[in-house]
Every structure is written in C-alpha cells, then in structure tokens.
Image 1 (cartoon, one colour):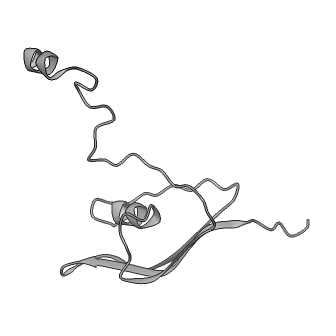
Image 2 (image 1 turned 90 degrees about the vertical axis):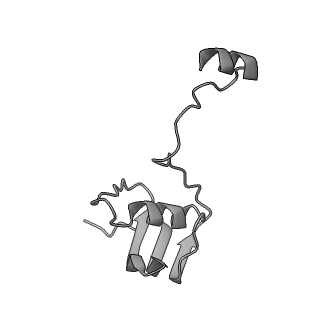
Length: 98
C-alpha cells in the first residue's frame, strides 16, 4: 500500500489563550486535513468554545500560530438562538405576543 498524502487545511501550532488568570488553552497543536472528519469533545470549561472562536478569528490567541489555507469555518455558537423568537414581526405584533 502506498503513502497517502492529505492536504492540511488548518494547522495550529502551540496556541495558547488566557482570560485574566484563567488559562483556556495551553500550547495546543493539531491539524485538520482534507477529507477527514474531526469531532471536538471535552468537558465544560475545557476550551472548546475558545478554540472555535480562535479558528473563526473572533478571538486572537495570546501565543502560537494558526495557519488557515483559506478555509471557511462556521459553527453555531451555544449562546445564540438559532432563530430569534419574533424575527420578521413588527414592533406592534411583538408587543401583542408578549
């Protein structure tokens, strides 16, 4: 069997991020390769959301390097509703429903 070469789409090298005195990520290194399926699993407070925010460039890491080969990253944040409850309704209609 021959060698299979995979294109590296996203690579993190020794990425760290802290908020005040709380370390969210410390020296995280990994790569996401083309045609691979990857799951991000961990306990509450393990840094999953921070990692996703760094990958989407919403948060800048304190140190390390993120290399993105022009890949689009999207995810649904846990703290935002999928649909706003009264989206598309006038203010009067919203008041009547409340």
